[in-house]
Length: 140
Image (tube, rainbow, N blue to C red; front, side, top):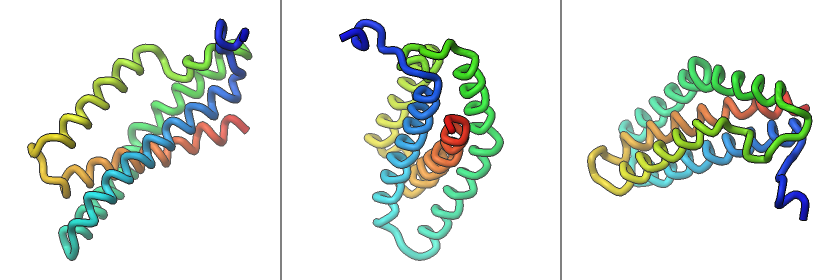
């Protein structure tokens, strides 16, 4: 019952939870992309996948890697036991809500063709998954 009053976990578990969240969202975004790509064949399919993979590598190494490093450092500087929700800064929850809303909006409108969205989703999803490895390495 004390966990419900103060849901504290060790830094190791905060790092694991961060990695699991990043991996999980990465897998989810890639599953959307793969489902959409089943409708295509030939060069449009090859181009979309190539763009998605390239975008994922670029985003992972030029953007998300730095974000993950900052999050890891912040978690390592916390007390040994901290709130389970502290794996992200509170401001990040706002950003996550905005990004989820944008994703839902884009999926439910025809502003962009699915093949284009697939590349973006695959890029962001792959970048999140690649960057999640940093959390697992640090958690030991």
